[in-house]
Amino acid sequence: MTVLTKGIIQDFINGNEYAFTQIYRLYYKDIRSYCLQHTRSAELADELTSDVFLRLWEARENLDPEREIKPYLFTITKNVTFTWLKRMLTDQKMKSVFRSRYLSAQEEASQHVAITAAMDLALLRKIMGRIPSKRRQTFELCKIDGFTYAEAANMLSVSKETIKEHMSLAKRDLSKLADAADYLYLLLPLLFSLDNYF
Image (cartoon, rainbow, N blue to C red; front, side, top):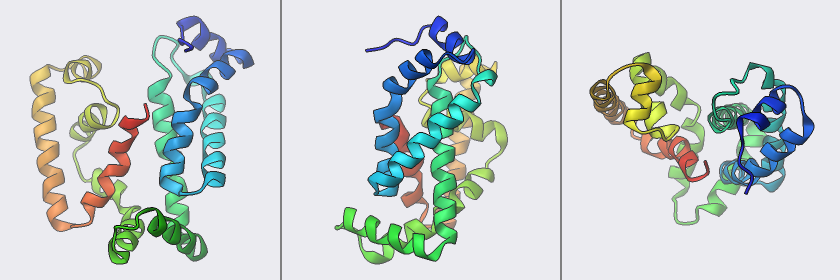
């Protein structure tokens, strides 16, 4: 298995294609699996995966060679997937195709639940946007990016106790929002499922 050293990351930032190939080989399967899970289409998963790596390549000069590539890829993958889902939700034909794929992959789900989940997915960002920024950032670092409370505390230059408090408040906020929007429990797995891939 390839280990991404600081040298490889620096070479990638400098535009070295071999370094890019090493990053691509290391993360391709995980990113494609994530995209496939959410599009239910091998063709679309390939397209979105290519888009993820293209965006990484285009943004390489903005990367910090002292930090891991994985969080950047995570963010790009999430953004590419959300962009596709939002586009799909505004296109009736795409929505219809996605709905049928979703239903066939989730045979045990009722049609009403599956359609509601697909149609309300674009609202997830708005819901997350209602949480105060520090709280949201803490929640994303710990629950989405997979950092420990201690790591998040270090990254945000706060105490571990502050992180615990932010997490407690964020969970309370999400719980209140879930009461107001009973479909929320269908949407959160989209965010949390990245933990299974990265």
